Image 1 (tube, one colour):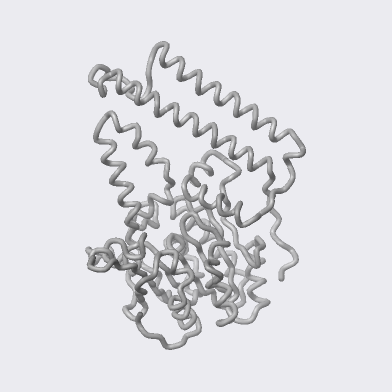
Image 2 (cartoon, helix red, strand yellow):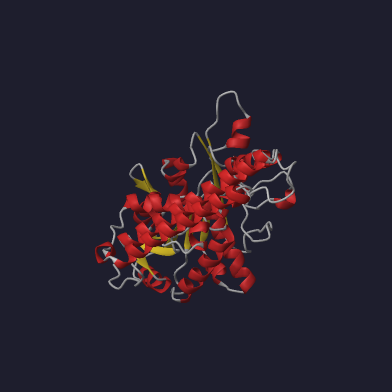
Length: 397
């Protein structure tokens, strides 16, 4: 095991409390904005009596709302200064699975906001090996000291590296034992736009491959959003002329919404319906609170300009889908699939052929009676993964 781990600013109780305090201020201000917007729309009969700003009141009413905002910032700002000044709050916090879980959920829901506002609760992208944070160079060195090849694992929305373990099973650890692969987990802020995480991952993997011996080949296993981030990173590398995608082994996608996820499409529709009526339009802001990462799941967006991007030439990609069919309802598999991602989307299919993400027919697999999260623990799925990474013959499921 590596003895010299990456040095980085350690999370403290103070930084956690400062982050929560900052979110409290943002939350109160957001509620005040919503109430004032509703107040203005009601008093102006949906704007018919007032052609001005429908989100702000005027006169004494407007003064009251402004004072509430100012008071909120004054109180939370003072508390933030106090937290930074008191030494007992500077003790390091326990990097427990529970803390990582709520941080990952928070980042998935509003991680773009956390980063944009400089909130200390925003998660940086990192590589995790044996529950330790490593630089790209250290991860490459750790891989070199092990037999077999390195295996990179990318989690999905609101998740982290700890959550690959489900019902006592972890694909990474099992493949380490059965296929001699060295699992290296990526932890990232899943609330950022997919292309932003793709840029960060591309930079990490460029550094990683610079120190990876030529006889080692990076294998990749992605779950859900993690697959979009990996595809984005490969595209970034192609655009930059970097050659590390050519050195990849197999890239396997588990339930990746290549063509989008049903729930986010539903959320976008609700946003639209709310904006139609001037009285309900302020509530659409609540829907917009969800992160760019979540919004990217509507169409499986991996670039800033919403292009349809294929896997780089030579990349050996595999798409694994799941379905939880309801007896007598054929539409379930087509639209709902594993509960979050349809089978067609997970296999890259699209009603317009020019927008399909292409996989070889022999590299596409569907597992029935498996949920989206069940892809992380189902033994049929694992045996297929083991055969893929071990180059064993396998059959379609």
